[in-house]
Each structure stands twice: as structure tokens, then as C-alpha cells.
Length: 80
Image (cartoon, rainbow, N blue to C red; front, side, top):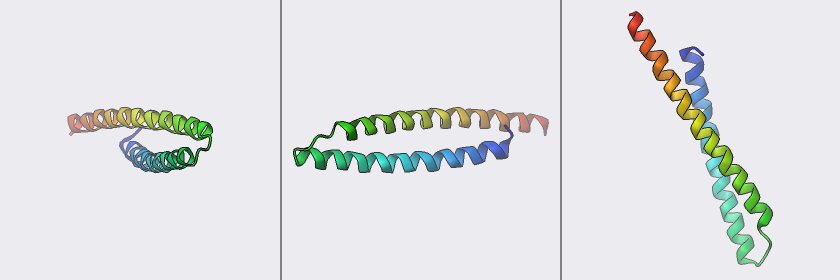
């Protein structure tokens, strides 16, 4: 990927990570509410686990993209 594409990808990842963190916070609140009301929260916990997995993937993808962008910037500096 070129520098511009990587920067756009990183911006998208940052947005997705923030959105996922918001969903996770809301899901935790829902789980607490269900448990306080004596309701079954198993499905809500499963969804939270899925969201946590996606968040971990997003963080890993962001880190790899940051490293790739750093390498891209180094190559550009060497040319000039």
C-alpha cells in the first residue's frame, strides 16, 4: 500500500476501534442490567466475547498498519 492508502486505513481502523469500544461498554451495561434483574445474560456475554475478539483483531491490524506506514516513510526519506 502507498502512504496515503495506509493513512486512510489507519483512520478507518481508529474509527472502528472507537465504535467497537462504545458497543462493548453498552454491552457490559446491558449484561449488568440483565444480571441485576435476574435475567439470563448468556447471549449478551457471548456477543461481548465476539466484540472483544474483533477489538483485539482491530488493535493488531492497526499496529501492523502503523509499522507498515513507518517503513513506507523510511523508504521515502532514503529517496530524498
